[in-house]
Picture 1 (cartoon, rainbow, N blue to C red):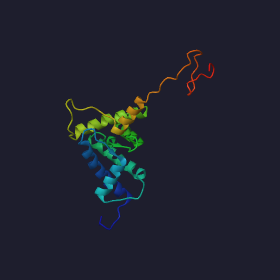
Picture 2: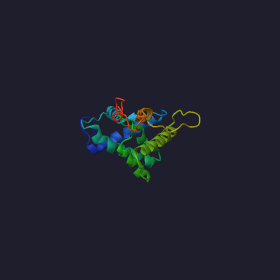
Picture 3: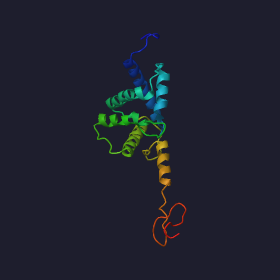
Picture 4: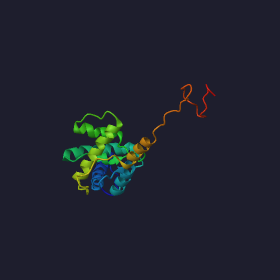
Length: 180
């Protein structure tokens, strides 16, 4: 393909998938590292020189699907577990392709899926030579997701205040509507 020839959509996806694989192997070389879909998309286009004006969510899924299948073919852990959403730090819905390719049942809920991805990330760090702590490291949710879970667990709701005379829940004023 010459420099003036625009690649076909399929050629672009192939080039992007190959570059995504390389980028993700690089991410896997740092213990507990993750990359956002946005960062990955920008890096793929920068390195390949093949740009698109299409929205990221319209092209990144098929590219990562190719990465999933290639990692499985090579016997590598699922590198796409390293890719998370910017806003919540979770792997995307496309992670179900990792499960399907591996022949594993889909997780029952989102948090179970995130724990599966954490285990897969640890396998990636081990496979691609990240410096691990003594004992080989531990699986971890992405930093953003860990922070969100921590905030939720700290904001435990207080039980409602109850009137000591009539045992009904007090309104926000703290004065019982029944007893005054």
